[in-house]
Image (tube, rainbow, N blue to C red):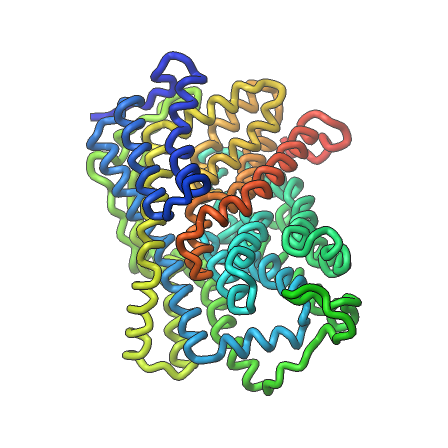
Length: 546
């Protein structure tokens, strides 16, 4: 028997919206205000979402229970699978002593912590976002930063702030491909429109990142490197997105950014070197790490293996081949195609699919595991040693896996019960200001689901419909959903748990949330202002693709 979603169960849209937001309020309040441990906060949020979905929005209890289990399974696979295997590889690197060599070898490029942060969190992280997405860049960069000596809060929060501008083109363009699927808009136009919004922020975010870490004056002292990192990311981002498509935008841009900064550091360095204790004058920007070239190559080899395999695993042709021989599609009985989304959220009644894709071989986490195993042999580990280390890692991240599973359950509950649509329709009531608030709707979608792809699937159709009613470009607003969403990535609970796990700072998720929240909402508002200007203000309107 099918169930049709209702978006105003209390008869007053504003009251229904407030009630629909309660699970998010419970989750974030428990984390940031009450400072409850993340797994308990997530379970409280899940309980609240179940009560409201069943008790207020009249979702059948059986469907609610199935949705919660479905979301938990998705949280464990593929999200938790990525985290487990990244941390496994990191732990082996530390146990072998090679991570210390890698850490010290970075001084051969620069001893300045600000420049290390710029290269790793922004440029290197963008590569992993483009190749894999879904938590991989935060897991990798946060682990590297903590190994370099950054404090846990800095490593976590700064990795989250850096992982913004590349997100719309993450995992070889997956968010925009999903957006095209639900809106029916031209993929290249969506890619190009996002490529006329995000380059502004690809230049801004590195400055913002360094300001958050070193303060305004500390950021100004290295502005040439920050500018080079941003510009050499933004220009390829614009060109590839507008003249090729969404697939390789981040990969190309990240490589250009890393190469440009590295070349700059061969001919320029700041007058003062920023260490963790402050400025240290009269020191060379490039230190002597005391390791041979062979030792440095060995230290970096596992991460090169990881980069290559993650990139190959994400290629459509490779993924399609691996899916063909390994994927299991499991429809969720009692849920699949039994929930109907209705206008005005969608153009016509649409059944919500619920199929768990157990792509055990093509999943990004599987590629990371293969890279970890190969790297383990390269580092001299035997099969039994790796198995023991894997058990230790699994025990270490056990609570994080529970948290991620519960977080994704909340996201799935908001989607299948219609809570997300109720909140989305409130944004759509803003009329002329819709370009601004529609952008924030994308931010809300990612904050709820932890995924720009999921946010685009949830709200893409609503953006297209609302834009047509308001009289602005549907392509602009669909792209704005994805571009606004990237700024919500740093506060979604899933990403925060990934960061806390990678830095071994579990239990401090509320501290991380408070650290990044202002940055998230401020940057999202700036995206909204730019989209508003592109909708109405000359000459920004010239940037709009219809």
